[in-house]
Length: 88
Image (tube, rainbow, N blue to C red; front, side, top):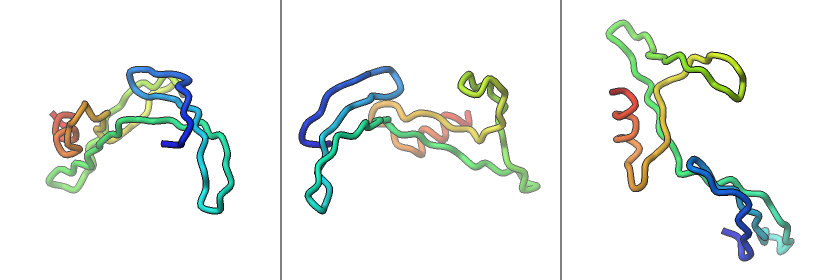
């Protein structure tokens, strides 16, 4: 994190901070940084080489999208366990 940090928003899926950062050349700037716990996805293939996709409604685009099974990491969860959970 930057040397100076101001919490702008904290939700269940992400945190938004305003941070004062120093770049390698010494210049400083205030940046808006989104922090997310990470996620994991699985590219699952069947015996015929077809990819498993899930159709989900996404409010942000107001439409249904085809996606690979994926999810947000729980606290201290390994990415492989997250991917297995999403495939289950």
